[in-house]
Image (cartoon, rainbow, N blue to C red; front, side):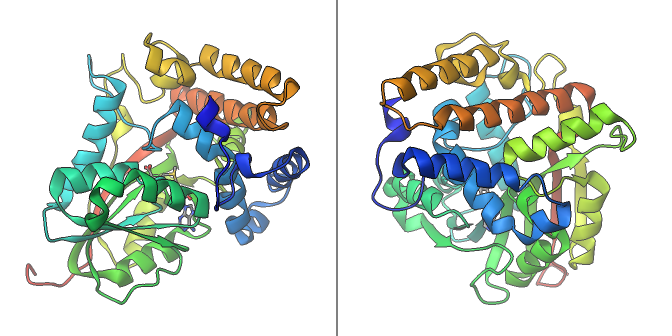
Length: 343
Ligand SMILES: C[S@@+](CC[C@H](N)C(=O)[O-])C[C@H]1O[C@@H](n2cnc3c(N)ncnc32)[C@H](O)[C@@H]1O
């Protein structure tokens, strides 16, 4: 737990804030969910930055360096499934040494580090959150020559047209205020013939907007995960086409995973290993208790437990959304920018 709140020189995280600032950050963040979807979309920079300033250390502590879900096969470990889910995108895009790949919303660099090591391709990661960029640089020190970072907004990528050979988006554009607009921007910076593959958080056909429980699950997922809204799977395919992409494949990988090991299993606490404990309900409750004690004896900043409570509610809502089948974090698509030598 000590690394969780270590002081840092730049970037803003809980370790950089005094108790009043943490309380005010949590209040500001919560307030963003008392306004309309449109107002929240207008303030997406605040939603994303508040959320990841507060949540990044908890994610790294409880989940690791790759901030996404993965469908698990029978007998497969959590970490093996995460890596396979990343490698799958590389295979679909034919990723190899010499290619220039954009990682849209690169988190703390876990997936791009894994893929750079695996394929030898060169990556540019763009991320709105300064603290995560700082973490990503640290995590990719051993492969610096293949990893470059841009602290910026994927709605406005500061790169030339037709620049990249491929782009990946691992659960990053659920935060976007306008899906077609972010896909248009990715389309612009891809070369003709370039591929774009990703995993999107979506509502499924089972989601009923007239069902109060479904609506509550959606709200809690949004608030617990820093999202302005959640799109339906069909909206994602439509937005890709509206941006100009040819959609080669689009399907929900959640329904293809083993029923014994659904993607939300890690949050349910059915796996008993030391490493998995922080992800489980008991582990999350223990972390919460440890934070309360830590706050009292002043070894962690006051307000930390409040953050952990918001994240836990979000995790419980993800499990509820998965169990009810109304939500998926792995709507997979492969899209291509028309043109290029192949056409
Ligand atoms: C769920 S995390 C996924 C991170 C990474 N792809 C991974 O799988 O580890 C979503 C990421 O999107 C980034 N993000 C959200 N909105 C963004 C924006 N407008 N521009 C750039 N990055 C953004 C967040 O800062 C965060 O790093």
